[in-house]
Image (cartoon, rainbow, N blue to C red; front, side, top):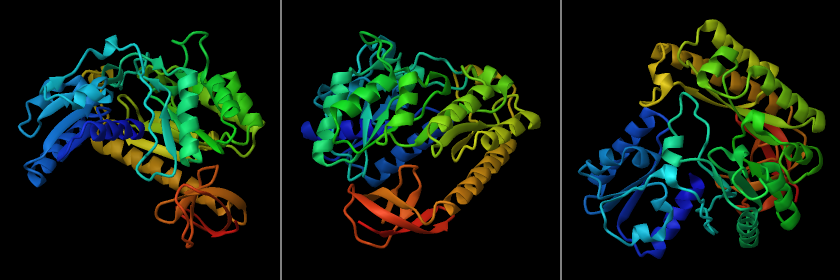
Length: 400
């Protein structure tokens, strides 16, 4: 979304749009759509004369809903939002069949609104049908950006001044299946790091545990520029719940992945997405998720209480009470915060590299937040000595 919003802003500016508000909506939950509609209404009240354009997954899945809102002037689909012609016409609705999309057009984005790291979309869409997820119907089937286009984009970003690049996609570990020769994500990363040797740091967005390929493991073992922090799409720690989610991994697969990676690079850390209160989840099943966090030594948790999404199989399954979902989500978040605090406490007295970000913060290769008092240039690499740990990271002093 960061990448695509930057593309949208670039295309709108090139088209000369003025006094225009563009909403790049999410449809991952019904709550996300509700919040989008609320934000659109607030924007209209605050800017009565503005042109409001709505795009993104929610607009792709239900364009008529948004076109019917009196606050909305135009609706664009997910394909159209990345085409400059869409911003040079006044047609009220331009939304094509996303399932017919075949290509992922690369856009040369060089500015991410002052962000310290750049995001490069290498893959789009998803071929899987998890029972809780509507996103394939907003994004279409999986399709990949050719290796050469990715290399060109990253090289340009490095020349612009970015020292860290994040490769991202809807299902990024499925990268390459639709390209000639079927390159894997690991092969893309190897090629990228070889052809852009001046790139200091490479990260990946959320990974499917069963799709981490041999070349990614090779990078974990041998490449210092490949950051020792991976985020896994875990979702649950109980096998029956994982099957009802229609995930392709079981809890042991997660344990095997982290064990294999740590054998290659002992200091590597992991984050995870976890859904709390999925339909039919009882106390024992939830306890399996808690134990998995502990057994796999997961550190950075993105926890979501399950939210029904109309049109998905999970929405028709026996529901867990909402207050139970929220309680379980809070318990998991507290566990994650406790585990982070313990890890941060052991991260003091280290000499580490950070990239300065806004607000006098930066992140180490292990994604530990470092706060500092010096005035530093955003996006620049610095060496810090870590001192005191806090609940949210560590403090640091500038070394070089």
